Length: 226
Length: 226
DNA sequence: ACTCGCGGTCGACCACCTTCGGCACCGGCT
DNA sequence: AGCCGGTGCCGAAGGTGGTCGACCGCGAGT
Image 1 (cartoon, each protein chain N blue to C red):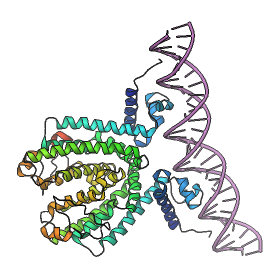
Image 2 (image 1 turned 90 degrees about the vertical axis):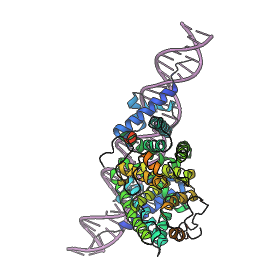
Image 3 (image 1 turned 180 degrees about the vertical axis):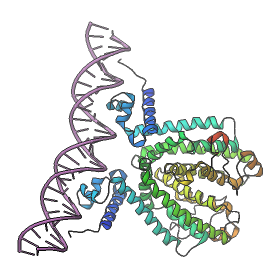
Image 4 (image 1 turned 60 degrees about the horizontal axis):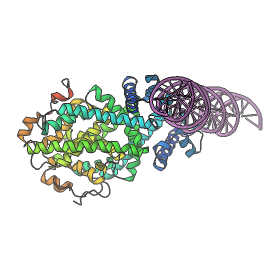
């Protein structure tokens, strides 16, 4: 049989080139031709590996999801319960330069979903995974006595995730709420009513009333400004 | 002087045609040519009224914002405080067929914002307006004794709005959380911890633990069912 | 060495947004 | 009435981006 390339790694290269372009030149410059040029191949070659450009977008989305999961794994590390939940959210929220570019891609992706129903599946899948993980952490937090026994875990998990989605949008729009400090305040504000005193101590979450610039250190790095 | 058309109403016609097309044929079919054809004019004529297609999008966004505000005004009517806040949120959330199409347009709009910084201004403006109104309603609700005195109004308002934004996305993606019942559950879940017994009675919000299928039927009109 | 087929190039096609030169028309002016 | 000037509008052309298909070349298997 003839020449054989590793199709999977080639696809990965293409996706990487796309994300590189987005980060460097912005979403609008990341066209199929630009991606091909970035890789030093002709644009037609792309279609040996992807059916169309939306499939590239879809793959980029998956790649971002995987990256985020990797970051989550690192951030959560050996933590569990409330700390794990907070660390996890810290990796999903668009707090850093890395996640900034990702937010651009992701929000643009969402915009394309309406007329590509198949694309929606991934977001659902991603959310289902995160939801399950987050729920497990919250459940553990309740078992730890960090969250009150009456805490509606299910609802809390969904709320936090939808909040994260909303924050992606806010971040793209450069709204005031998208400031890292504020992002954390919203998260802690959702958790606060359910925290036990032990939870407040353990999670290092600011008390309900006073929301300082107290971001969990392991997560966002520097939020110290605000 | 020569023939004069009402430029403003012409612009409105174009925007209306665009939104009609989106509702009928989907976002991807709503091209500049299609809009022109819908109006029975040539595509070139559009650019006498808009600098480019993004400006049409922008105008459509503004139109949707205005429509939503009109609906909010109707829904809020003579209500105030907690009921007004809930009614307001009910008009922002993508709960009905009307808001469905709007969500498609809006989410697509957000996707285009990253490389059109000027477009972001409107979303910021819209959010600022809603934030102020919502805050006023919540403030009144606290004064009414429907929300506890320690309620972090500022934070609550932001949280609810970001939640609404997130729900738009979820709705476009047809996630499970986007079900109307669930949407309401997230909202009430955020409010619940701060409600006083009087507030629970007045707002007819389901108790924290048990979330029935209590979606206000007329979107926000009648929340009194319980 | 031959061959078959994959990976790639190149150019063409189509749809889109946008521009532009020109025509048609209308209101006022002479 | 007949001429202007300016505006509304058309439709062709330009530029760009996604996608397809005809062709080439290399390299693994025979």
